Figure (cartoon, rainbow, N blue to C red):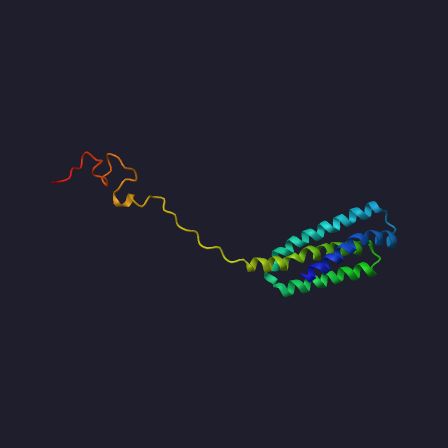
Length: 155
């Protein structure tokens, strides 16, 4: 859980820092910066879908190591790069790590849930029918001789 907090703090720091860094280092106006940041964030989110599908096979230790490594790479790229493309890649990687940090938590939660019990078999036929009895009393019911005029008791 601590990893998810650290990566989320990194993401939100870069979310609000990348536009200012891009304006300061490259002189871009806010419009193109916002569009580039949005495209990078969508790409990072799409990358998270694929990562979530594969993370179950990697194991929690490898997933955490990968996320921390990519998060560190995003932070270093944002601090030292003067290229706009690298800054956009950094925010894409940051959104990937922040959302991908939920993968180990979901794997742990899914493995903690017990298997559901097998469904019970329900009888679709009442228990009295296989024994030659009708479920309703009436003239044709042989289970109730006093109600049936065809069956007479022998003296």
